[in-house]
Length: 229
Image (cartoon, rainbow, N blue to C red):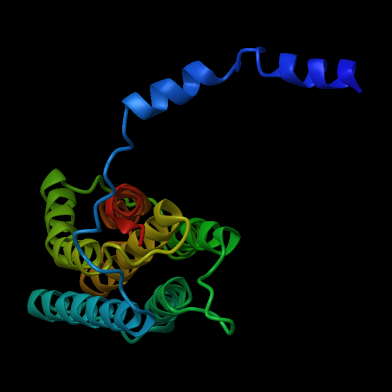
């Protein structure tokens, strides 16, 4: 028994290998934790912001398209059907990206990636199916006119989406922002093609399709920087 007591007393003489860690932590107090500058949005508030941004963006696109005038052959099936499909993809895609599912969870990453891919692929398929090479090169001023019109249409929807949807994404903010930006860009393309009657494939792909790519890139950057809730 005496030997056991002596052994237990000698255990107290063994130095603590983590003593320096404790001393270092005591000398350096933890950084203060500050409350967030803005309170987190509730689910109804996120849905309300999303609805406001979509409605305002679509109203602006429709106003600019109406101001610039509609093409004469807008009612022909060759023009109306691709535009209707593009508008449906843009609207339903935004609904999927912004509204929570049955269990209150947002759309998954795979669904968002599918939306980001569907916007440009659907546009390119429709462009190839309905456009061809022009007999004469399209003048540069017409390319620039459509690019300027696309920019004027897209500026407000992109800005509204970045402003109203900041702090609204619970997960995958970059992919969610890219999906919303690409689908907003597709809505701009639909309005632009309802105005511009040029069917040259190079012109349609370059001057009309740019808002989709720009929207995806800008949306991804805005989502990564300010989108997470």
